[in-house]
Length: 342
Image 1 (spheres, rainbow, N blue to C red):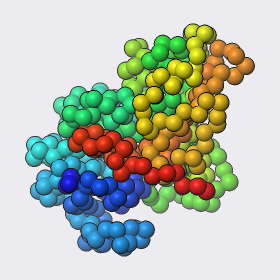
Image 2: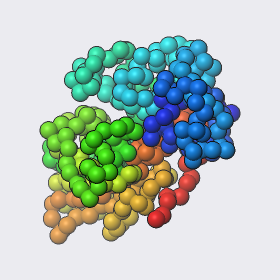
Image 3: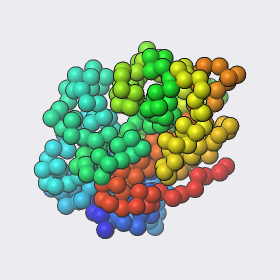
């Protein structure tokens, strides 16, 4: 059994990670930390876990975490990088669900996150944990940068087009929408039900932190810098991301359905819907990315629809998928849940 610890187990992502790991047959949960809730039984904070977990939250302590085989960080940006070097020295492998190790350029990190990076020497070693892109590197990694939710949906939607060289990488548009859980578990006026209910808006139009992460991914398989217009939106729902993606074809003769089918033929967590319209409720609670690709009016514009649950394939589920790869387990272990409906 893998001995696993979670740092920062009180947010939505931490709660989802707990839910998945508690039914994982290869995992033993050793420690769950929270500075604010130390000493409180986990099941008191999360009643849906009553009878499933008997641990209490504890103060973060690297000496205790050092007894784990793997530690997940479900913490705010800038937290994991303060502890990761010491844990790696202790022989612990780490998956960070925040953004601390996603960007390879420390100057770019500081520009978008507002603080200097504490261990820039680890940025090159950290493996970006999108299995559909970096599966073999993930298997041998000590440190995984778990992708953001928007970058997961957008990257998986664009990947076959750019890797196949059939679209212009200088003209890409990502029109993405997220449920409010993507903003985290916090008391903020803009996230109150009376503020978001029966409403819909774009935000961070002049620049979002996930944009450099997405363009870094796209360049990896496009071979050149991608010019992306990325606009996120907030939807009055709890879970889910829908990304409608637009690109201009340079190969008008390409069979788009075949292109996507060939690229994702062996991907357990990618479901293609030729001619369909994937919706967020069809992936709610599941570690699935559902994709449809279309060419309106037989023109030169291709439209891709990509949906995920932002807390599962966009966060905790993908982290467990990475854990399975790192320790030689079946990649889908603990992640076979069917989506919730309605």
